[in-house]
Length: 164
Image (cartoon, rainbow, N blue to C red; front, top):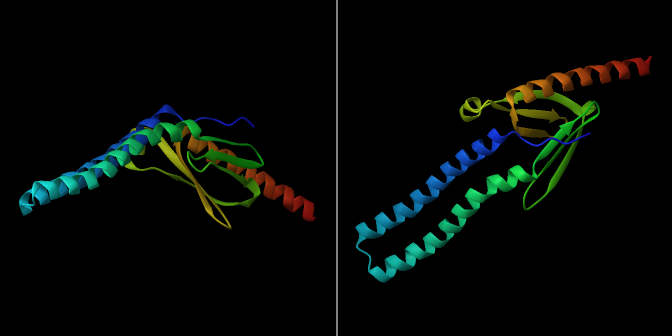
């Protein structure tokens, strides 16, 4: 089975999400600066507090803006008639193998940003857990669900025939 890479629109989606997180971080820093200014704190105290908040905020901003590209590079997925494989993770690498015969439910999910970028996610439920392949094109997500559903039905028929 050949593992596939994600569509380029996924990178756009992750950067948009990172931009929202970055805005929140900048908002925290700006709020601290405003509170210090309005409270009339001395310049030494203000400088110490702003540096104490600013340095972690800058580090988090850097990580927030670099992580989407790293996640995109490390993500691969694929499936066949017997299993689904997903490789992901930047710091902690993860390889997930889900046997098709253990699938109980398949769901396609989409948020507003995903709809705009024509992306969708597939949630795979088994008896033990749920796994989300969060960023496929809508065509890939629909095709995956249809093919896995057919594979699952075929597998169920095979098991029924083995019992007889």
